[in-house]
Amino acid sequence: MLLQLCTCLQVAHGFSPCFIDDTKAFCGLKRLNQVPRLPNYITFLDLNLNYISEINEKSFSGLEALQILEIEQQETQLVLKNNAFKGLSNLRELNLGFNRLLQLEPGAFNGLFNLQTLNLIQCSLNDSILSGDYIKPLVSLERLTLDTNSIKRIQPADFFFNMTEFHELDLSHNWIKSICEEDLFGFQGKHFTFLKLSDIKLTDMSHFWPKWNQCGNPFKNMSITVLDLSLNSFYVDMAVLFFKAIRGTKIHKLILSQSSSMGRSVGYNNMKDPDKDTFKDLADSGIRIFDLSQCHIFALTYSVFGHLSELEEALSTLSTIKLDGNRFLCDCSLRNLQTWLNQSQKKTNIEGNVEDLTCEFPEEQHGVPLIYSVLCEDMDDKETVENLRFVLFNCCTVFILLILTCAVIFVRLRGYCFKLYRKVIITFVEGSSKTPANDSFLYDVYLCFSSKDTGWVEKALLKKLDTQFSEKNNFRCCFEARDFLPGEDHLSNMRNAVWNSKKVLCIVSHEFLKDGWCLEAFTLAQSKMLEEVKDVLLVLLVDKIPQYRLMKYEPLRTYIQTRKYMRWPEDSQDLEWFYNQIKQSILKGTKGKHVKNTETNHNVPHIEAVTAL
Image 1 (tube, rainbow, N blue to C red):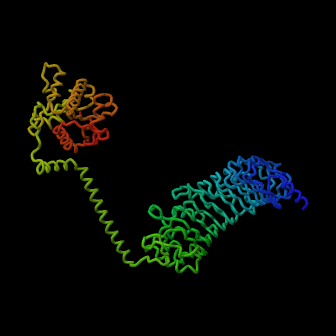
Image 2 (tube, rainbow, N blue to C red):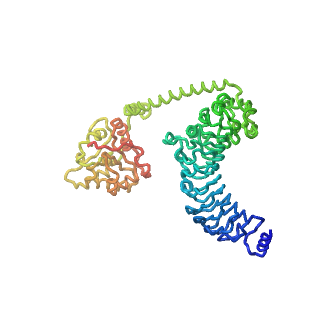
Image 3 (cartoon, rainbow, N blue to C red):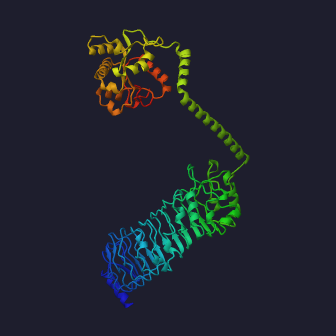
């Protein structure tokens, strides 16, 4: 007592930065950079929120009576040297939480053989805190908190077999992709009173994961009083596989609360509500308390937990169930659940007030307790709806088949369909086929092409267009082999052909691009188009010419980038349509009109040009 009185007097006179109350020393928020000198009878020491950067084997010299030590949230990186807690064999609780980038030497916890509680929350620790030998000296450890660290895989070292008192572990808020039997081998044989695996992601363990069969039971040879798997986005298909993997593990209380993907909620029809098979593999687990609160279960049917006989098969020892926080769609599918809730209140403890389980939808029943809601006024409505669905299905099937049949017929016979369409239009709408208007032009169209392409042009175009080739044709065509005056300058002939023709049709092929006279004629036609601001130039691509080759020629590049052009069709079914398009282009008015690049070739077949030469 005399020693304590002297110490209090020293503190009063400013010799110690800490506040000492009986055997407790409060040294938090004192801007300390090392452990201060304190009386040797101190059993509780608070060093939180200081600037201590290192703890070594001399730091706690003379403080052998310490039982609880808190060194949380230092404002600088904290390093724990080997034997950092030398002499503290009486220490029962050590709190090192919130020390970002905490650095541990392998023997940092040497000598703490009576330590029962170790808190390492949010210390940036990795997998080695469990797989390495850091914790090995803590033979009396009971509780370990590793919440919010950088642990990616749970692989406890073999020395955990010898830690017989260890029963409480918190690994929440770590990013752990999966947990399998081989990972948790070091925990086998243990009984956990509390195993918290909340929000550990389990991103690999979707129902598509190929390793479900190899994974095994992560809780093999363990029993658990409280297993917290909340916030892990368990959805129905994943839950079925996970429960199958842990089948037979004894669990008193299972927490799946805030599993946002468990249930389809409102508008999430791609997710499933739990059904009678979701929890069937928990049959042998002995679950007495089941927490499904704040999931997104939308329509919880009676068969989820069974009629009581089925429930006794799957969850025979269930004594408590928690369903609050869910939003219910009160329709006929909940009729059995409503019956079960009314009958089971005495046999199964429904945590919270059962009247708090209210309807979210439909709107007229919003807020009405589920046990009192009117779920089905007429069961015949369900049968009527099913019949309507069947009729609608058949009608849709017939309609789709009809559309597909029409599409196939059109694709295979589109040439014939177009001919029939033209006959109808000419007969009932246009009358006789259009002829070019009489005007001052000598020709309707000047066909500009390479002399090497003459045979093909005559067969493919002139016989379909020129009046001298067939009486059925309506166009006065001009082309070099027939209409250019012999003996006259070739350039003059081209100029006369361009200016005496209403339209100029350039048949662009590989040979066209090699022929300088053809390119000159194209330039003349383009000059006329720009001078008169009239759409007098038509371009027809008849070869598979890469775009970059066309871009090499300045006049062609300008035209291709700003105007529509035509391609010779690949499929012979499209020829009739194509000839109609080219005739319409020749007959069309000549008022100038620019077209954006994105519209290029929109009014002609989007078919790659093929050589027909």
